[in-house]
Image (cartoon, rainbow, N blue to C red; front, side, top):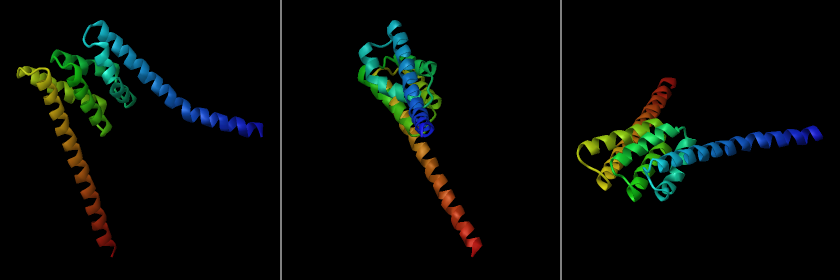
Length: 164
């Protein structure tokens, strides 16, 4: 009986502790990132607090501190601040939630920020360009997903026809 109870306790701990550790790691990584960005006077603590949840989510999905820092620096160089920063990071987070790899989502944001800056855009206009680039990528992902579903259905229908 003692072994059974001990076994159940071990299973419960092994099931729930990794989630807690992963959350702790995300919290630690985002805290370190925030400290670095605050020290460099890139963003205010208020701005960083406003994007903390999204950053933690992306870290939990594989984003690295360095990758996020690069994206945030690119946005900063484009004078993206306040609500525009929050909107850009939120768009990136939505893309990651839609299945895009965090590194790829970061590359899309950085590339859009660089292109917009090269065109003389900054602030709200640059953030809007980033948002548009992410919308385009999400649409591409949805189109690919739909095409794969259609192919799968066609393949299934074709195999049903052969079996008759």
